[in-house]
Structure formats: C-alpha cells, structure tokens
Length: 448
Ligand code: SF4
Image 1 (spheres, rainbow, N blue to C red):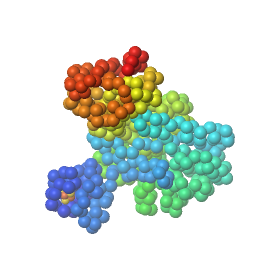
Image 2 (cartoon, rainbow, N blue to C red):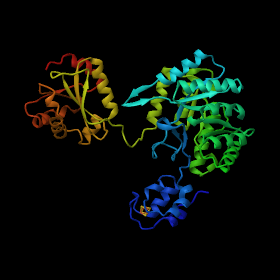
Image 3 (spheres, rainbow, N blue to C red):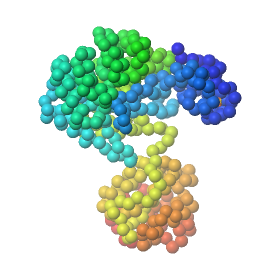
Image 4 (cartoon, rainbow, N blue to C red):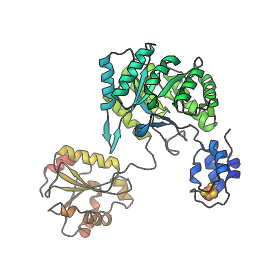
C-alpha cells in the first residue's frame, strides 16, 4: 500500500534544511506522496527509511526497460495525467510489425524501413527503434528463423508475440541476450510466461480480457517478483481502448492502484485496416497514454508526423528546446558572405537556418543564447536587445571570419537598429524580414 504524506513525513529527518528544493520536510513528504517528487532529492534520509519509502516514492506508473545497451527503451515512469502539470517522462516506443508468415522480401523491406525512416529535427534524431515479431504461423521453427533474421539484420529492440509459451520460448532462445519484451502473459499461460520472463530477465506484457482480469494477471506477476511489466487491456475498438487508457492512468495516479500502475501496449494495427486511420489512432495513443504503439507497417508520410507529435508531447512544456549559442556556417560561407543574427529557440533556429539553406546563399548565422525564447518573446523580455546582441557578436570571433561590417537583424527587432549602431561603431545594421519564409528573397539582393 502506498504511504500517506504524514506517514512519509514521520520517516524523514525533520530538519527542514531545504536541500531537496522545498522549504520543509512536510512539504517534501506531501510531494512524494502525490508522486511529484523523487526520494533521491533528499540526501539526508536514512537507509532504513529509504527501504520503507521505496514503494511510496516509486512512480505510480512503474518504469519498464526493454533491450540492452545504449538503445535500451525506457517507458512508463509517468507521474501526471496532463503534461502541463509537470511533464510526460518517457516517450512511447513505436514498433513495426513483422510476421513469420511474411516472405523474405517483405521482411527485408520492413527491416530496411525501420532503419532508414529516421529524421533530423530541431537538432534531434527522430526514429522508432522497436520491432514486433509475431509468431502467426504457430510454428516454433519458423518463428525462430524469423527472430534470427531480424536479430542479424537490425539492432532494434524486440517484442516477441505469441500466446503459446513454447513458441515464444523457442524464439526467445535465439535472442535472450537482446532482452526482448515477451507478449503476452494471459489467463491461460501466465505461469509459463512468468517463468520465461524471470529466467531470462525480460520484460513481460500481461494481456487481460478487460481491466479486472488484467489486474489479476499483474498481481500474479508481481507476486512472482516481476516488475518489468507492460499491460494490455485487450480492447480492440478505438472507443474502448481509449477509455481503458484513461482509466488505467487515472487508477494508477489518482487512486494509487498498483495493479494497473504499468505502461501500456496498444495495437492500432488491430483496430482498422485503413493505414491512414491507423496513423490517426496511433496519434491519439501518443497523447493518451500508450507506452508502446505497434503499427502494421511504417510509411514515411504517416510515421514522420507521429514522431514529431511524440517529440512535442514529451517535451517539457516549461523548458523550451534551445540551440547552442555560437556562429553557424550555412552553405559554406566565405569572408564576403552575409551575417545574420537570431535567438536560440530551437524552432526559430531551424526555421531561419532552413530558409537560409533554401536560399543557397552562403551565409553566417550568429545564434544568441536567449534562454530558449523566440525572437519576439526574448526581445520583449529584454534578453535580445542591442546592448546584449552587440557585445556578444563582437566577442564571438566572427570579425576574424568576415571582411565586411554588415549585420542583418530580424525584422521584429527593427527598433534595436539604432542601439546596435551605437554598440557596434562602424557597422551597418540592416533590417531583415520578419518572417523566415522571406529570407531567400531578401538574400538575393545581398552585396557585401
Ligand atoms: S532535504 Fe530532506 S531533511 Fe532537508 S528539508 Fe528536504 S526532506 Fe527535509
């Protein structure tokens, strides 16, 4: 049972030292009980109290890992219903399905897609890194052959899918070192599946026929000492599956109901035959509250928006994505190339640098650290004004790279041009366009 705030408070040092970031032990205890703080934030808690508090301080949705090494997928660990309350912690894994009834060419094509459909955005690599292998034939030898093929052709994390424990065991034997997720323990096979997961140190999914049965299954897995558990309510209609996702998250967070406190796995592939509808359903599960989403196939036009959505939903809403301050070279600039300045809000940087790239004009772009704020917001907050931009550019080392003394500023801060002329004597301050889309047209007329 989870402990109340007062019960937790009794186990804390009660010195109110504030080292945990809140002024009193009582306030820290209340945050801990609400799942909004981590016990590790208090450096003074005794070992004895730590072990007593471990259950209370565990996130209401337990964290689960699949795979090994650098590419290990971590899901769960969530502590809030809505991202604006704090933030969502671990983005869902997105898997492509490969069946052992597919021919070699199809398997190869899917492996290729899972590797090549990778995108750079705001300085991050967006990809999937999860393959679900389904023993559709029911034949252990065929399934093992598929596991071997995929294991040799990809370093992605794996999900092994079969309701037959012997078939799953055969496939697992071929890839146990990759620590795949075993899908799934059901009412009919739970003992064998639990034993397999325990023996091989793998995560296991529990699949119930409804939430009540699911809770019974996870209690059994918990009793067997298995915590690396993923859950599937078994619903395959969009309405019921969505309801289940919300009930599971709410039961775990608001009612501290441990049997449903695990990340979920969902199968949009089994809810529609229409690939576009499947992408829409997957999109819904990114926001509500899937831990793993299994797709029937990957298509660039639907996968890319899903990856961008996942990035947005799992970005801390209180901390904007920022780019590093410095001088950026675009299209191989030289000493006569134009110099522009912008803020370090990632989206601003990527729009501006993208448009400069499109212009094909070799250019220098100086990105000023504005604490991740956009041009307008940072200017309004006094973080992107002439007295800050001017000295930063003069100290940046750009004067060793260019011969001219011309600086193009964003149209939105045209009012700073006078101040910049004072801060940067002998420089010509040019007011560029307000919108990134107008940069290529503006640069056409550039003369050093
Ligand atoms: S760091 Fe520990 S002892 Fe200090 S106020 Fe926080 S909970 Fe209390």
